[in-house]
Amino acid sequence: MLDKYISNGYILGINISERDIMKLKELRKLNGVTQKNVSSYLNIYQGNYSQIENGKRFLLASQVRPLAKVLNVSETEILNCLEEK
Image 1 (cartoon, rainbow, N blue to C red):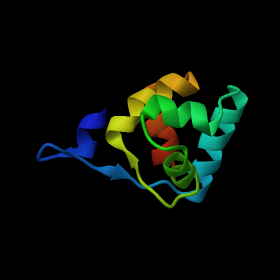
Image 2: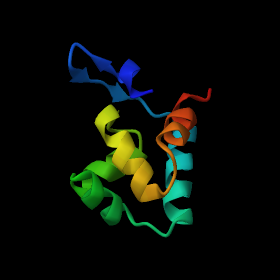
Image 3: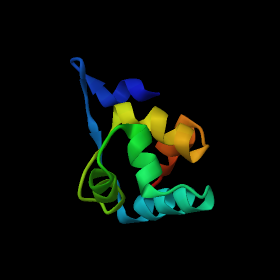
């Protein structure tokens, strides 16, 4: 499912709408996970993850799998959340 986010060996960013941001925040909070926990798991700065949640930074396709794991959901659920319009 991640294949469509990879082009010529480069991982593309996934744009997140305001509604999707709320879903990510809700999932994170429902699982009792802090932004610091998520950012550590994604191996990025907490400020960068905050920017992802606030729509100021792209979520990379390579970050979907670890994000799903730390939020205790499937990769498909993350991608479906981001693609539902």
